[in-house]
Length: 219
Image 1 (cartoon, rainbow, N blue to C red):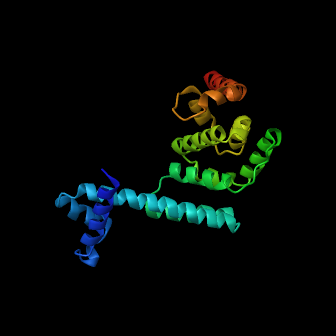
Image 2: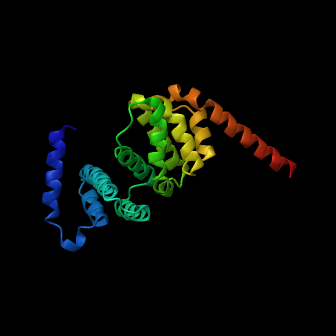
Image 3: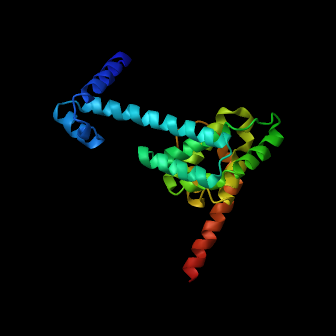
């Protein structure tokens, strides 16, 4: 579908709303009414546009709150409220958090100093990240974002493993998700470059995992 067609349909949507009683302009009523009239595609486009706008609004609100140095506990509550209102899942919220947090710093151009600077910068936001990393899907979304960021910003290439280890030590990323990321293929750019960086840490995780399983067997 061409952009012109999309805009025309959305314009039609807005016009059609005017013909519905005020008490029937809820999403549920609109879905039923428009579905019955063969306008399911229009409803889908409306929801997609509303979803994009909600994500832009959440991003802008978080950027403003970060600029105002709002306490993390308030950031968490505000994000939860907005995410709940617009049905934005945690794995998408955490990707937005990463994007906003990483855009807030001027990075050192020396690679040997950058990894420590980035870890220190991120550490202050780990409670915020942890609040939305409550599922394997959300954790994996964050880990994938870290991977993308380090690949796309060349100075961060050597910082990847340090950032992942820091997120593990601060309980943002779990052992299970890191091992899943390491063992299973994904199409995100840069993974092959970071596998070697992560090898020693993953071997340590695997060793700890095996010791834990052995202990359970002994019991």
